[in-house]
Image 1: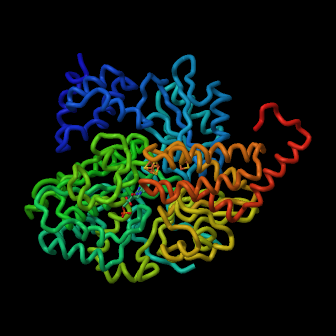
Image 2: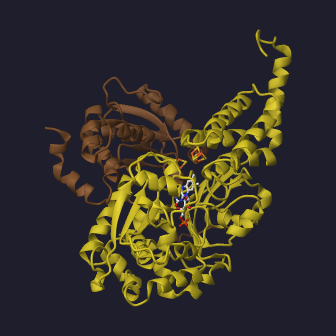
Image 3: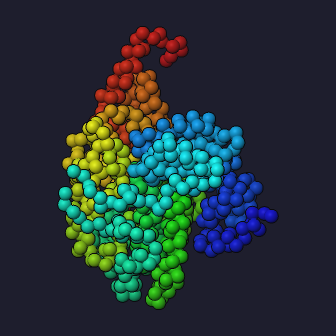
Length: 179
Length: 434
Ligand SMILES: Cc1cc2nc3c(=O)[nH]c(=O)nc-3n(C[C@H](O)[C@H](O)[C@H](O)COP(=O)(O)O)c2cc1C
Ligand code: SF4
Ligand code: FES
């Protein structure tokens, strides 16, 4: 089944949100990536056809944004933030831990294709660094012990209860503050 | 420490508050909408916002009511509101909390703004990585639509305002308002040359307002309690209301603290964020996100409002306050931020595209103790040739870390270079060196 057939209703719904078809491009690319784990060239062509664009118009957009994968990545895509605020509280150490535990450096995937490691720029969690995103979820205030648990949870169940829920930090603010 | 009232974070601080529609309505949510739609004329809502003195919380601090006033009065076609939820400025993490913990507060602000400017469609452009945030917003929009606060014929008034979540896909530059519009149109996020401004030629070339999440979240409160109430908070007349400051770095209790504008950095860091995490004293801080120049302990009593921070040589920006302790290398810190800017430059203008790469390479060389004294002039020269010569304000932002660290901590650069030169005295010149 083609992409267009498989997601017919979802595609119609997405198109209905915008007065101009091209605006649906990024949302449709997300649907494609959710389906395949990356955006294949054939899907780009289908999307181009759907939106009455040329394939290069789709390609130039896909390649501008860092969140679209042009080739398959591991089942769990670990993305460690390395921007200044996280670096001040130890993000480089987190990258070293991942390397020590999984034997991969940024850009690499483990041989079993479970984990891909990337380093990324600020993910809006700077007060709870060091942090990483794995697939859709954030994991914050990382320690080595926490990282071990997350990796083993992912291996065994595919998800981890250590992921962040609706964000708030500090958790309940009217604490005893300051001196 | 004087106690002050929370405005934006108040609901979410209540024990058990989930951010659902029921919880939000219990705290008086959507009353502002009920009391405004069809009851106050749209231009009067704009006047009210102008009187409150509310200024944009996204970075530039432009007065919100004035911005709305730029939309053409007699234009018949569609207009758009874009809620800027791209929040990618390193050091900033407040919009995420506002959206994930109290989404209806943001949505009520969005519908009020739509009403004031006559927009029937709003897009929330949320950064792609915030998957949870976008799901929470979508659920909240569903609840609000079912309750008649969003969609067609809102509360039977005949007024329409639809709200859609649109996810970005990982590009810092899409927080810049015209890049955001390009991205929303399905293109690469390259900033547009201004003028024309979005107020006349925005999304799909139609009149458009772009406002930050926190800016919009203030609107229900301004409507409920009146512009005079809001205008008295903070540092009137120019910096009114509160700011949700995001404190990060070497403090005991990093996090989001909502305080009236005009509080000093010292109070924010020591009273709220618990002071330094170790016995090392504060060495440097950034008052407004990665784009704001670094300041020193001598600036600890600077008031955190637009004017005072600007007078101190930096900017209030996005409200991200990053604190660094003694022992942090300022050359290293400048390089970390510069690597960010290098990675995120959209490449449209050559001074920014090429300059950012040169700046990173030069800083790396100095930090690796392979620098020369001329490198300092090169750095400053490069900065001078980027700032003010680019399509968007990114160019001014990217030179801030280097210019400010060179101004306040030049000696650290000099020491690294001296070490390099001392080493070179006993090392033979590599063959072929110019
Ligand atoms: C490089 C760059 C990045 C920006 N990123 C953001 C952002 O992530 N969020 C935001 O609200 N504003 C951002 N802005 C500011 C927007 O261009 C715009 O001024 C703002 O969204 C207007 O809303 P406000 O008036 O409510 O502040 C950025 C500006 C520049 C130049
Ligand atoms: S200043 Fe940089 S980010 Fe802005 S438009 Fe030019 S190249 Fe792009
Ligand atoms: S610096 Fe890492 S999340 Fe912001």
